[in-house]
Amino acid sequence: MLVSCFSQATLEQMKAQKFDYRVIDPLELPNYDGIMLGLATRYGRMNSQMAAFFDRTGPLFSAGKLVGKPFSMFVSTGTLGGGQEATIMNSKSFLGIMSLQT
Image (tube, rainbow, N blue to C red; front, side, top):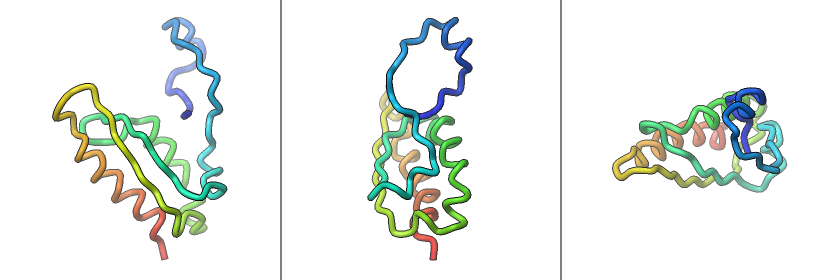
């Protein structure tokens, strides 16, 4: 589970459903054997929460901590033609750089 873009007060005002999931820290990624992502699609890009998550992986990238880690992804949209293929292609280029750094 990723950190919400909304404050706790806003979530309470929205009467948002509460989930009991652990929020992952991007710096934990080297502890895993691989990475599999389920991405929501927003006009051919990963959603802002996931993009912000990966923006916080800079220290891992600079230290080469994700080199050689296998990764996979799948996308989901609520409509046909919602940019699924574009999201995969746009995300692969970023994540490929992270795991294939030499």
